[in-house]
Length: 404
Image (tube, rainbow, N blue to C red; front, side, top):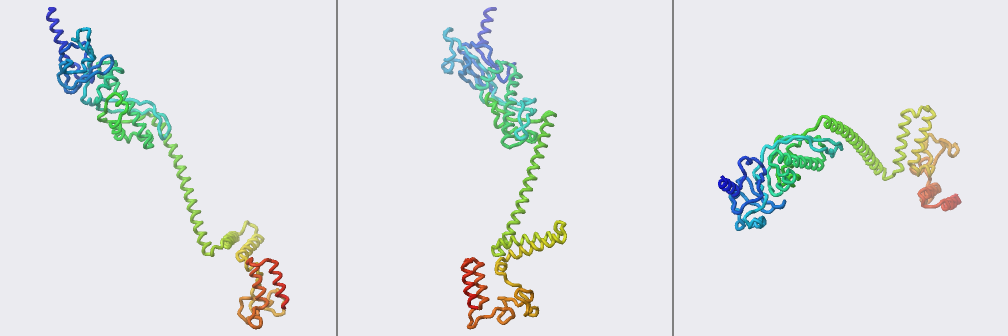
């Protein structure tokens, strides 16, 4: 009986492989760390074998049957136990599935997040299923053995992977919303985009050597309280944005009105040969006329008379040359009164613009020289234009009058 036990135990120790009952496990750890020299290690087609010693990675064996000897596998020299005469390797052997694991369901709340647009803290909830594959078995085993304690239960391993997956989803959601300046309220219509981004880059899963291949039936929602909070914040934001938009539109309309008025004024000034003073006076007269049309400020005849006086004064200001010269008002010949004193209405007045010989027209001096009146008028024009000073004007005026 003892001989049979010895033979049976010896054969068992020389054949190392994943047992059929553990074929479904993502990671299977061989229970015995003492491996006899010349043992046969079988690695299935959907996995690889990793060797660790004292928590450090030592070597890797791919699919196939391997005879454990240092001649064929050099890294085994680091595993030889010299106390047994070199007949035993001491190592932890992990079998890791490299084929995709499909249809892994997930669901539950993420951690609290701040909406990058509405600035409210809420907790999104995600549901669906994903497929994953181990792309870096060494990193996966290091994380798995450290976090799951080498558990032989797939539920424990998948629960650990789902925790990393949820952290990756939260990271990707934050990145997308911040980059596109979108509220968490928009996540419902971004499921496909978010799923593609998570498949492309799930940072927390990369840390453990896993990759998400696809995500199905991906859904993001909120509790009733969070949904209400976000909608109220979004409503307040919309009202604020509408107020800003209305204010901006009003400002643009006012600016357009001012621009049109400025262009119109510029054309009027140009038509007046650049005489802004005349244009300003004309605008003032128009204002006075509007006041007269509206009956003034309720002051009756007195107010009307004041407005007429203002209009007359502004009209005189529009032609300062005439006002400065004191040019007399023209009276037709049939209305002139020869006997009236100078300055009396109807008295003969000098009118420089009348043709020669017309009543009231200045008479030319003998020999075609300018008359006294014409010379005085010319002298007054020079003074009004600022070409001579008051002293020069008085001196020349006196000299001309001496000739009378």
